[in-house]
Image (cartoon, rainbow, N blue to C red):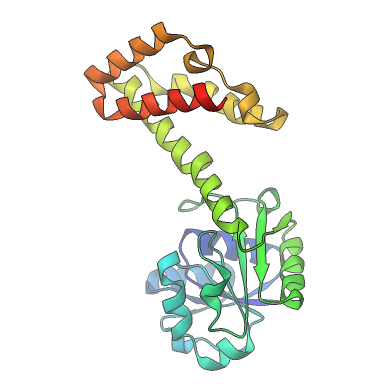
Length: 256
């Protein structure tokens, strides 16, 4: 299958390489940055284009790997023949399927993972979440996911916001807490690497059962003495975190 990549940032690069490695042909690579478009085309054996109206009406899939807020704008700028005749995908977990409704055939191909520059993961270990404008196109997306060796999940419209929120909770929010823990260590002149085994064990335990079954710490134990010491330390050294500490401790006590 030939695939055009529209947007060669972190996600576009990762998916482009995965498709290429799986034997798909990468056609054209578009980016607002000529340098990024040229690099992606060179890496993936495609053709760099620097304007959306240069996209040719020949690929099986047109993957919009752009910022969520740009999806509708980019779609509107695609040549009309492409919007009417080709299958157009976005890869956002936060943007509804209806954002592509200007097209005739459309779907979502969302890898549930956090990407960073230069990160080219083995997508076989990453869940792919799918939705499409018709059962026929959904079957095509299933085949596309399977060609990468991926597990796919079919989500109803009302499930997408819940999944994206859950992903933010376990990835973005947890990473912020990791960063704050490292900051606290650094301020106390403790090497933050001391936290790494604890962080890894916390994540690895999830393979054994629900996270709530493994909750530890002073809040779940009702250890008010330790919690008061923590709050006193925060009040002196990191006062902006005090309300967050109190809220999380309360939620652990009441919810778990």
